[in-house]
Length: 388
Ligand code: P1T
Image (cartoon, rainbow, N blue to C red; front, side, top):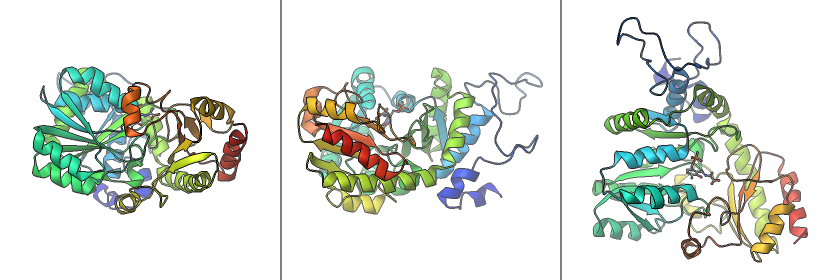
C-alpha cells in the first residue's frame, strides 16, 4: 500500500502498517535492527541518507514514521526518554522565555523545569482546567509556550485542549500537550489545535515496561528541524534495539488500550463503592469533574486511576505492601498492573506544600491498570484492603 493510503487507515491498522513495510533487501516482514553506529560513504558526503546513528538510524526512522502517522503529524522525533524530549523543547526556546505550565505534572517534569531550566526560563504553574487562568496569565505575562498535561499525572485533571490552543494561537503562544496518559489511541492533540505532542514512549506506546523512550510529533517543519538539530547536538538518541522494541510493542496499542480501559472502568467503579476509599478519580466516571470534556476530546478514558484511601500515610504503606498482583513500582502503561504512592515515589521532587496545595496528599494512591483479568485485579486489591 502507498504511504498516503496507509495514513487514511484506522489507527489500529496504522499501528501495524505505518513504518512496517517489509525489508526491501530480503523481504523480511519485520524491520531489521540496524545495530550500527556508522555508515559507509561512497565518496565524502555521498551517502544514502545515513551518516552516524546519533543523527539518524533506519530502525529509528521507521518508528518515527509510524508515530507521526499515529498522531496525524508531518514529523516525529524519537529520543532516549520522555524527559529528553522535554529538554529539547526547553533548549529550543530563547533564553528568558516564560512557560505557562499545568500545576499538576509528572514529578520529573516539575523537577526539570524548577531545578534545571529555571536558570534559563521562567515557569508559571496554573490550574489549566480553568480557562480563565490561562487567559489571565497570557494577558499578564509575555508567554512563549503553554505546557499542558491532559490528563495530568497523577490527579487526572483534564484541560480543554481545543479552547486553550485557540487562545494560545491568537496570542502567538505555542502549545505542547504531554499525551502520555492517553496514548495516540485515545487522544490526538494536534487534531485539537495543539502545536506539539509529547509522549513518554516508556508507557503505553511501548507497553511492555522494557524500554525507556520519548517522542515528539508536530507539523511545523522549521521547529522540527530545530529540535532535530538539538537532538543531534546534545545526543539523547534512542538506540536501534530500543526503537525496534517500541516498533514491536506499538503494533498492539489498539487492543491493549481497549483492554486497559475495560479493566480500569471495572476497577474504578469497584473502588468507588469501597468503604475504605475516600474518593476515586477516573475520567470515565460520572463523578470526574471534567467527565463531559473527557468524553468530548478523548476517544476513551485510559487505564490510569487515582484514589484517596481513608487513612494516613502509615495505612497507605501497609496497603501498598499488601498487594501481590499489582506491582509496587514507578512507571505506567505496561501490560502488567502497577501501583504506587506519588508523594513518596514519582512526585517526591515536588515540595510537600506545593503537592498539598493542588490536592496531591499523602493518602493518594495511583494505579496503572494492566490487561490481566479484572476479577483477579479486584481480588488482589480486596485482599490488601482487608489488611488495613
Ligand atoms: O520516564 P520518561 O520516559 O523520561 O518520561 C517522563 C514522563 C513524561 N511525561 C509523563 C506524563 C510521565 O508520566 C513521564 C514519566 N512518568 C513516570 C515514570 C511515572 O511513573 O509517572
